[in-house]
Image (cartoon, rainbow, N blue to C red; front, top):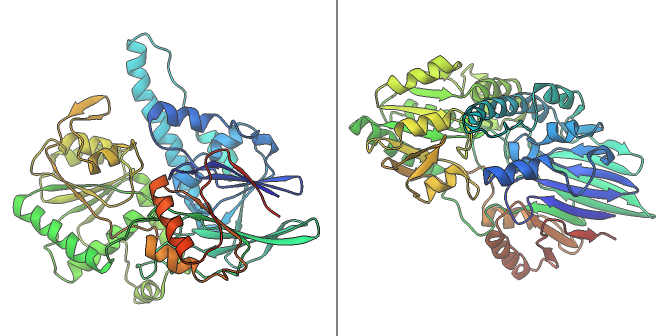
Length: 466
C-alpha cells in the first residue's frame, strides 16, 4: 500500500491524496487549489500525478471548495467512478459546484471582454454546469457510522468531523497481503463547544493518520469572546453609520454568523441593524442546513424544537438576484453585508469591497482563514493599494480580523484530539493542509508528547505503508 500526497501538501488548499491499495486507486478529496490566479488555473486544470480515468473511487471529506471544488474537472478529464460522501455533503456539493461553475463562467466573461479588446485569446472556464451534472450523478451518499465495503478488501466508515455540515473523518479498514491496516483522514477537524454542529467524534484507534494542521502552531480566542467582539463592531458601526463588509464562506461560516448575530440582537448587546446575506449559495445552503438537523448539536436541536429558526430573524435580508445586490451600493449605513467568497477571490464580495474599501467609515471584517496570495490575505496583511476586478483601490476602510470564529481546531484542540488515540498503535501521523511553519510547530509538539513518528509530506511524496 502507498500514499501519494498531491494537494494540500505544505499548503492549505487543493486537498488531494492518492491511495494505492490492492491495484486500486482511491482519491481522498479533489479540492480546488486557490492562490495566484494563473498558477491556480494551471494546477487545477492539469492532473500531472495520475490519469483521472484510472481512479477507481473518490472519498470526499466535506463540501468546501478546497476539498471538493475540482471534482467536475476530474470528471471532465475522464473519471467515471463512485464518489462517496455523507448525505449533507452531497446536498451541499450540488449547490457549491453549481455556484463555482457559474462564478467561473461569469468571471471568465468579464476577463475575456478585456482580453478581446487587447487582442488576446479568450480563456475557458475549468468546467461548466454540464460537468457539474455529470459529477453529481456519480455521488453515493452514506450515513455516519455506516460501514460500506467499497471493495472486497476495503471498508469505509464516516465519522462526524464537526467542521461544517456533513463534514467527516474518513476511516478505512484495509486488508492487504494478509494484514489488516486501519487508516484515517481527518478532513478538516472542527472545534469543540461551537454552536450549531456536534463536536468532532472519537474514532476507533488507527495505525496511520492523515491529519490537517491549518492552525498547528496557533491558538484561537475562545468562542465565548465572539459575541462581545461582534457587539463592539456593531456598536461602532451604529455610532459612525458604517457599512460592515464581511467576506464569508457560504457554507458553514455564513450560517454561524447569522446564528451569532441573532443571539446578540436577542440579548440586546447591540441595536438591530439591517443584515444582508448577499450570496445565492448562502441562501440555498442555509436551506440545506434546515434539512439536515441530524448534524446539529443538542442546543440547536432544542432551539428548533421550540419552533424557532436560528438562521432567520428580524431585519435579516437574503439577497437573491444581481439587481438587489447592486442596490446595496445605495443602502446607507449602519448595515452589514455578508457575501462570498470567504477569501474574497471571487463572487459578489469583490464588488462590495470595490465600492467600500476606500471609505474611511467602512469596516471590513475578516472572519475566516485566507490562503497566501488571496485578496483576503492581502486585506489581513493591510496591503495597499489593492487590485480588485482589474482596478486599484487605496485601502482606507478599517480592517478587523476575528479568529474566534474559526471552524478549524487550533494547536491545543488538535493535540487534545490526537491524544485520544493509542500512541503505541498509531505508527505515523502525516500532517497536511497547513503552511509549513504551522506544520513544523505542530510536529514539534507531537514529538514532545511522545507520538512516535510525524511526517510532513511535500507535493509528490510517496510513502510505503506496511
